Length: 391
Image (tube, rainbow, N blue to C red; front, top):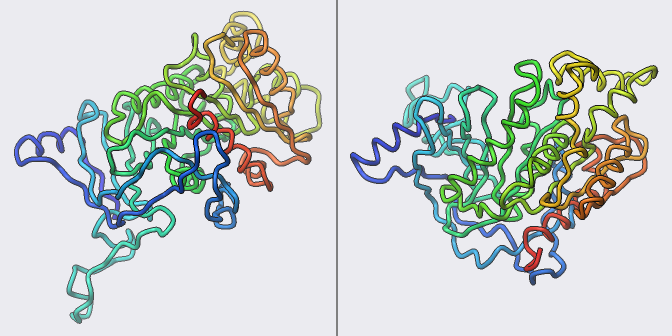
């Protein structure tokens, strides 16, 4: 059973009866093997073959974020905002709340069965890959889509963070499709923030960028709840989520604490998508064009709408304070490498490094990430930004 609680209510209870504690079913577990700062990360367990949404394969990097010690089996819950808009839902990495059976199985009360025969109490099974990891679902705003899953340990270390943003043409998709990728980064010792955001069917641009920025601001503001270092994080986005990652990374003169941005098949330039989707028989390019129009509120990049489209163009907002970026494309995918090339050129002009990787084939987004060597290369880049002394 997954338990939803209002954080304001928990805070009130804490004031009356002492600290509120949420117990996990997972025991202490070390999630990383030490490496020397700047050295070669050691191999992680193979999880790629288990992934339905792009987890890493054998050889993925583990990270050194300091001496781990033993993770506690409980975590205190604090108020993270107004009780009417902010709630948390706590479960273990196996997806079950502590002491509860699986939801929807019709489990009888502990000690009894439907036939009156004694049965053992239901026990949530810990996930062997990420034992000790707690997952909180946190509301960072009043709308249903303004939620993020926070994968974290319950020690007092300040760990680097990874923000994940799903794709889906800006009009579909969900953070649940990023679960295995979230798991792979949590396994390496990072705090993971897996974000949902308002879709273009609910709100037009810039609502999606605003949600991304608000999720990051909420995580940084309440970093102590999740053993998170608010000044050491990266953003990783897939497809349309890569556009949002880039838009956040180039917002104003750079975000505080942001060390890097990764885009996997990112739609860096909606204008390029609009142009490439015109007069083509490629159905996916045509769909991307229509999706960009929907994101802009239903208007094309002319007249009064030109300003909206300009706001959506990631390369046009490059500034010297932006974090370094890594962009990965397939050579022949419908989101062409031209997107990454435009970003690289604009950031180069202001002195911000961009690494552009191109893989053969047509794979897009998570399937591209699952290609041999791609996830490993991305994770090595992330580790270099978050763990190197000079970064």
